[in-house]
Image (cartoon, rainbow, N blue to C red):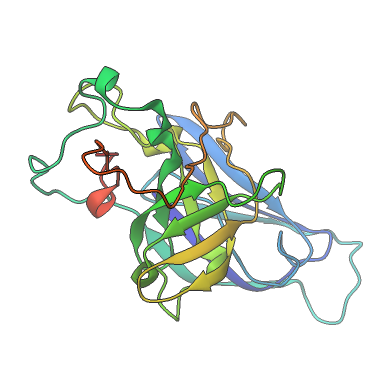
Length: 231
Protein backbone atom coordinates (compact mmCIF):
# COMPACT_ATOMS: atom_id res chain seq x y z
CA UNK A 1 0.00 0.00 0.00
CA UNK A 2 1.23 3.48 -0.87
CA UNK A 3 0.21 6.99 0.17
CA UNK A 4 1.62 10.32 -1.00
CA UNK A 5 2.38 13.64 0.67
CA UNK A 6 1.49 16.64 -1.49
CA UNK A 7 2.94 20.08 -0.72
CA UNK A 8 2.84 23.46 -2.50
CA UNK A 9 -0.52 22.34 -3.79
CA UNK A 10 -2.40 25.05 -5.69
CA UNK A 11 -4.21 23.90 -8.83
CA UNK A 12 -7.16 26.29 -8.80
CA UNK A 13 -10.15 24.65 -10.47
CA UNK A 14 -7.93 22.01 -12.03
CA UNK A 15 -8.07 18.43 -10.75
CA UNK A 16 -5.44 16.01 -9.50
CA UNK A 17 -6.12 12.28 -9.27
CA UNK A 18 -3.96 9.49 -7.84
CA UNK A 19 -4.64 6.10 -9.41
CA UNK A 20 -3.50 2.50 -9.09
CA UNK A 21 -4.46 -0.85 -10.55
CA UNK A 22 -5.40 -3.65 -8.14
CA UNK A 23 -6.86 -6.99 -9.21
CA UNK A 24 -7.31 -5.65 -12.77
CA UNK A 25 -9.45 -2.78 -11.45
CA UNK A 26 -8.37 0.87 -11.45
CA UNK A 27 -8.80 2.66 -8.13
CA UNK A 28 -8.85 6.44 -7.78
CA UNK A 29 -8.23 9.01 -5.07
CA UNK A 30 -9.51 12.49 -5.77
CA UNK A 31 -10.20 14.76 -7.41
CA UNK A 32 -8.08 17.14 -5.36
CA UNK A 33 -8.63 20.78 -6.26
CA UNK A 34 -7.72 24.31 -5.18
CA UNK A 35 -5.24 24.11 -2.26
CA UNK A 36 -6.22 20.58 -1.24
CA UNK A 37 -8.78 19.04 1.13
CA UNK A 38 -7.30 20.84 4.15
CA UNK A 39 -7.13 24.17 2.28
CA UNK A 40 -3.52 24.47 3.41
CA UNK A 41 -1.57 23.49 0.30
CA UNK A 42 -0.33 20.31 2.00
CA UNK A 43 -2.00 16.97 2.69
CA UNK A 44 -1.52 13.21 2.76
CA UNK A 45 -3.61 10.99 0.54
CA UNK A 46 -5.30 7.83 1.68
CA UNK A 47 -3.67 4.49 0.88
CA UNK A 48 -3.84 2.84 -2.53
CA UNK A 49 -3.24 -0.88 -2.26
CA UNK A 50 -0.76 -1.42 -5.07
CA UNK A 51 3.01 -1.34 -5.62
CA UNK A 52 2.93 1.70 -7.91
CA UNK A 53 0.65 4.70 -8.34
CA UNK A 54 0.12 7.31 -11.06
CA UNK A 55 -0.75 10.99 -10.78
CA UNK A 56 -3.15 12.54 -13.29
CA UNK A 57 -3.49 16.31 -13.60
CA UNK A 58 -6.42 17.83 -15.48
CA UNK A 59 -5.71 21.49 -16.16
CA UNK A 60 -8.54 24.01 -16.26
CA UNK A 61 -7.49 26.47 -18.96
CA UNK A 62 -9.97 29.05 -17.68
CA UNK A 63 -8.12 29.27 -14.35
CA UNK A 64 -6.34 32.60 -14.16
CA UNK A 65 -3.66 32.99 -11.54
CA UNK A 66 -0.18 34.34 -11.12
CA UNK A 67 2.07 31.52 -12.23
CA UNK A 68 1.13 28.03 -13.32
CA UNK A 69 -0.83 25.54 -11.17
CA UNK A 70 1.63 23.73 -8.94
CA UNK A 71 2.12 20.83 -6.58
CA UNK A 72 4.99 18.71 -5.30
CA UNK A 73 5.14 15.18 -3.94
CA UNK A 74 7.70 15.35 -1.16
CA UNK A 75 7.15 12.04 0.63
CA UNK A 76 5.71 8.60 0.10
CA UNK A 77 4.87 5.94 2.67
CA UNK A 78 4.91 2.27 1.74
CA UNK A 79 2.87 0.16 4.15
CA UNK A 80 4.04 -3.45 4.31
CA UNK A 81 3.11 -5.95 7.00
CA UNK A 82 6.13 -7.46 8.75
CA UNK A 83 7.04 -11.11 8.64
CA UNK A 84 7.35 -12.04 12.31
CA UNK A 85 6.57 -14.97 14.54
CA UNK A 86 3.07 -14.20 15.78
CA UNK A 87 2.75 -17.36 17.88
CA UNK A 88 3.15 -15.21 21.01
CA UNK A 89 -0.17 -13.54 20.25
CA UNK A 90 -3.68 -14.89 20.22
CA UNK A 91 -5.63 -14.09 17.08
CA UNK A 92 -8.91 -12.37 17.97
CA UNK A 93 -10.70 -14.43 15.33
CA UNK A 94 -10.05 -17.57 17.40
CA UNK A 95 -12.75 -18.42 19.96
CA UNK A 96 -14.58 -15.16 19.36
CA UNK A 97 -17.33 -16.17 21.78
CA UNK A 98 -14.82 -15.68 24.61
CA UNK A 99 -13.95 -12.14 23.53
CA UNK A 100 -16.08 -9.00 23.74
CA UNK A 101 -17.36 -7.52 20.50
CA UNK A 102 -16.20 -4.20 21.91
CA UNK A 103 -12.66 -5.17 20.93
CA UNK A 104 -13.59 -3.16 17.82
CA UNK A 105 -12.73 -0.06 19.87
CA UNK A 106 -9.06 -0.99 19.27
CA UNK A 107 -7.78 0.22 15.89
CA UNK A 108 -4.52 0.30 13.94
CA UNK A 109 -2.93 3.75 13.83
CA UNK A 110 -0.54 4.69 11.01
CA UNK A 111 1.47 7.90 10.60
CA UNK A 112 4.27 9.09 8.36
CA UNK A 113 6.65 7.75 11.04
CA UNK A 114 5.31 4.49 12.45
CA UNK A 115 2.40 2.22 13.24
CA UNK A 116 0.77 1.70 16.64
CA UNK A 117 -2.43 0.61 18.31
CA UNK A 118 -5.04 3.05 19.55
CA UNK A 119 -8.35 2.85 21.39
CA UNK A 120 -11.47 4.83 20.55
CA UNK A 121 -12.71 6.31 23.81
CA UNK A 122 -15.88 7.97 25.00
CA UNK A 123 -14.69 11.30 26.41
CA UNK A 124 -18.01 13.08 26.38
CA UNK A 125 -21.56 12.17 25.55
CA UNK A 126 -22.84 13.93 22.48
CA UNK A 127 -19.61 15.80 21.76
CA UNK A 128 -19.65 14.66 18.14
CA UNK A 129 -15.88 14.20 18.17
CA UNK A 130 -13.98 10.97 17.59
CA UNK A 131 -11.25 10.65 20.24
CA UNK A 132 -8.53 8.01 20.43
CA UNK A 133 -5.81 7.26 22.98
CA UNK A 134 -2.43 5.83 22.01
CA UNK A 135 1.08 5.62 23.47
CA UNK A 136 2.93 8.91 23.66
CA UNK A 137 5.99 7.55 21.83
CA UNK A 138 3.79 6.68 18.82
CA UNK A 139 3.54 10.38 17.98
CA UNK A 140 7.08 11.83 18.00
CA UNK A 141 7.59 15.56 17.74
CA UNK A 142 8.18 15.44 13.99
CA UNK A 143 5.04 13.47 13.14
CA UNK A 144 2.68 15.18 10.69
CA UNK A 145 -0.83 15.18 12.25
CA UNK A 146 -2.43 15.21 8.80
CA UNK A 147 -0.75 11.82 8.18
CA UNK A 148 -2.46 10.14 11.14
CA UNK A 149 -4.76 7.44 9.83
CA UNK A 150 -6.95 5.10 11.83
CA UNK A 151 -7.82 1.71 10.32
CA UNK A 152 -10.83 -0.18 11.61
CA UNK A 153 -11.80 -3.86 11.09
CA UNK A 154 -8.21 -5.04 10.55
CA UNK A 155 -8.93 -8.50 11.86
CA UNK A 156 -8.56 -11.95 10.32
CA UNK A 157 -11.77 -13.38 8.86
CA UNK A 158 -10.99 -16.82 10.35
CA UNK A 159 -8.77 -18.13 13.12
CA UNK A 160 -5.10 -17.47 12.21
CA UNK A 161 -6.24 -16.47 8.74
CA UNK A 162 -5.37 -13.48 6.60
CA UNK A 163 -6.67 -9.95 7.05
CA UNK A 164 -7.18 -7.48 4.23
CA UNK A 165 -6.25 -3.87 4.96
CA UNK A 166 -7.85 -2.76 1.70
CA UNK A 167 -11.27 -3.68 3.08
CA UNK A 168 -10.85 -1.65 6.26
CA UNK A 169 -12.73 1.52 7.06
CA UNK A 170 -10.32 4.41 7.53
CA UNK A 171 -10.20 7.92 8.95
CA UNK A 172 -7.40 10.19 7.73
CA UNK A 173 -6.07 13.27 9.48
CA UNK A 174 -6.20 14.15 13.18
CA UNK A 175 -5.24 16.72 15.79
CA UNK A 176 -3.07 15.93 18.81
CA UNK A 177 -4.85 17.52 21.77
CA UNK A 178 -2.80 16.12 24.65
CA UNK A 179 0.45 14.20 24.99
CA UNK A 180 3.16 13.05 27.36
CA UNK A 181 5.65 10.18 27.09
CA UNK A 182 3.13 7.62 28.32
CA UNK A 183 0.06 8.55 26.34
CA UNK A 184 -1.44 10.83 23.74
CA UNK A 185 -4.99 11.84 22.92
CA UNK A 186 -6.02 12.67 19.35
CA UNK A 187 -9.26 13.67 17.70
CA UNK A 188 -9.84 12.53 14.13
CA UNK A 189 -10.84 15.00 11.45
CA UNK A 190 -13.38 12.62 9.92
CA UNK A 191 -15.43 9.60 10.90
CA UNK A 192 -14.21 6.34 9.33
CA UNK A 193 -15.49 4.85 6.10
CA UNK A 194 -14.27 2.50 3.41
CA UNK A 195 -13.03 4.74 0.56
CA UNK A 196 -14.15 2.22 -2.08
CA UNK A 197 -17.65 1.49 -0.80
CA UNK A 198 -18.36 4.35 1.58
CA UNK A 199 -19.34 1.80 4.24
CA UNK A 200 -18.66 2.51 7.93
CA UNK A 201 -16.78 -0.01 10.12
CA UNK A 202 -18.53 -3.35 10.61
CA UNK A 203 -18.43 -2.80 14.35
CA UNK A 204 -18.17 0.64 15.87
CA UNK A 205 -17.56 0.90 19.61
CA UNK A 206 -16.28 3.45 22.10
CA UNK A 207 -14.31 2.17 25.07
CA UNK A 208 -15.77 3.19 28.42
CA UNK A 209 -13.71 3.64 31.55
CA UNK A 210 -14.00 4.27 35.27
CA UNK A 211 -11.68 4.67 38.23
CA UNK A 212 -13.02 1.73 40.24
CA UNK A 213 -10.57 -1.15 40.62
CA UNK A 214 -12.05 -4.57 41.35
CA UNK A 215 -9.44 -7.23 42.14
CA UNK A 216 -9.56 -10.60 40.35
CA UNK A 217 -11.56 -9.12 37.50
CA UNK A 218 -10.83 -10.73 34.15
CA UNK A 219 -9.55 -8.25 31.60
CA UNK A 220 -8.61 -8.42 27.92
CA UNK A 221 -5.88 -6.51 26.13
CA UNK A 222 -6.26 -5.93 22.39
CA UNK A 223 -3.65 -4.46 20.10
CA UNK A 224 -1.99 -4.53 16.68
CA UNK A 225 1.58 -5.60 17.60
CA UNK A 226 4.02 -4.66 14.85
CA UNK A 227 0.97 -3.58 12.78
CA UNK A 228 -0.30 -7.15 12.65
CA UNK A 229 -4.01 -7.97 12.43
CA UNK A 230 -5.73 -7.55 15.78
CA UNK A 231 -4.43 -9.80 18.58
